[in-house]
Image (tube, rainbow, N blue to C red):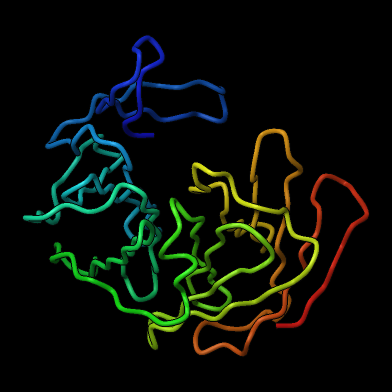
Length: 239
């Protein structure tokens, strides 16, 4: 966890870095070495399974955090800033870090030491791009980035064609939270499902990908969207 406002302060932002140990159920303040991201709103993060690094974008530049060395590294500096309503995700196959939200879409090539931020032009995904803090995750079965921003529609992005595909179904969780979804929409590799915790007082949902398709190019997916709190509601809809 990076940034945020400490509980003992009235507002503001910090450059604190914390990790959570599930075995001991304890937080630890890390105090990393290296250049830290700026203390700003709208910090964007994504975990890279290839390198084990966490990519962190403030309102200007891109950094990585390495847990083993407890250190930050500046990997790309920019002369202009970005909107602070973005969410990010990494495509580990194509080695791209992308950010969407607030009417903006950006992409970094993270296959090497670092690259400049570039505008990303796509079609069919205006609902995701124009939303605030959309839920974004990577689907290893289809090789696509998947986004949700409320309602009964999920959008998947093929980075090869730069095209979003919308899949609509019934029985969804309703509108997204007004202040964004962030990473409460995510993918569980162990279960092979997308998990959504839309609000602390709402049921949790899973979105099951039924095709079992190999990495790209996949056939259009079908989804099983079901209540995950033990209820008996289960709706299947072909894409």
